[in-house]
Length: 259
Image (cartoon, rainbow, N blue to C red; front, top):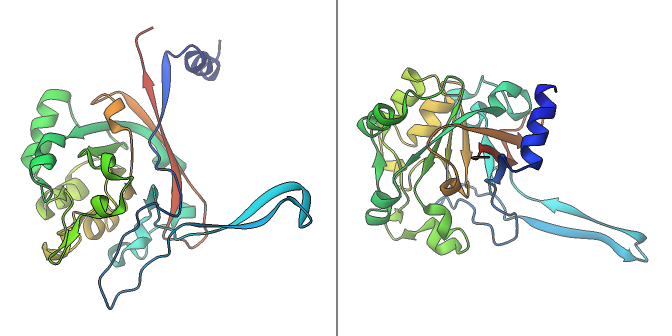
């Protein structure tokens, strides 16, 4: 039996579970809200073309209106000025989009402090227990924030001082960018940076440092609770938008279960 046949058999017999990590796209999907004077993306919208009627008697279809960075989406390196000469979303190597995934869980600390920032020592403690971060793989940062995704107000968690969502410190972002073999970082929040990232040095360090290092971001993930700390494979499928800085994506994980 070929390797691909073995994989298909394992999926059909549930020895390998396919876990959907993707947030549904609807007009209510939360989107990032930047303060004035910055411009914002539009919310996701469907525009009906025809639905088994005089506009098209036997078919139903829609136009879609959305931004590149809406819902579960990929940040390509050229999304940020530090990576402006890097690949666009259509140029991302396919090997970057399929790879090993590990899950670092700080749900308890994020529940106590919505402004929690991951530090280098937190990652090193994880590595001491689970092994090194995977070469060419993805670090999936679980904060429990996906449980808020059904309510945009709770998900964005903003007040007069700004947004309060967990993220990664500037020092840790620099270390992940420069000192680890990761291909990308995935998060459950609206963006890869914390809500308080504008006040960090540099501002928005995950965007500035990881994208500047040619690595990718993946946001608004769900169901990370269904993944083990190590051993999963992630499959990320953005649209190949030529010149695009990112794209909504379907993100799946393959997880081996006991037979």
